[in-house]
Image (cartoon, rainbow, N blue to C red; front, side, top):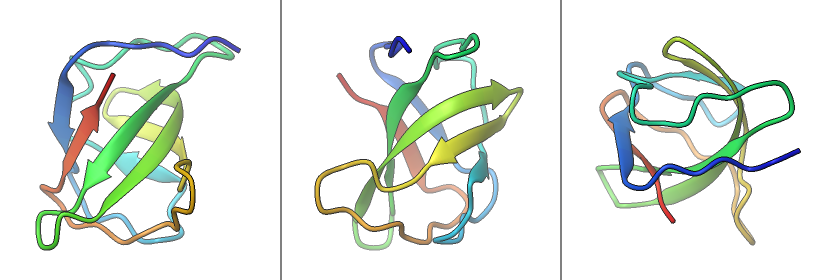
Amino acid sequence: MPVKYNDDAVTTLASSLSAVSLTCSVSSSSTFPTLSTGEYFFATIIRASDNAKETIKVTAVSGTTWTIIRARGAGEVALAFLATDSIELRM
């Protein structure tokens, strides 16, 4: 399964994300990679209130809805985020 990259892709959450959510709604997917079956990309969600971060693995994109696997970074736990918190694809 190949990982996809796209330099400096940025969007925001379109709605809140609970710590147990396995999908997220984003404001725009346009600067992020297009995924085919078996492809994925990693993104970082940054909470505006305290700069807490969580790495997610995005396994499917349907418009502005992403299917995700949570807390992919070493020692991370899934966090709750608010609408307008930032999501970035970092190289």
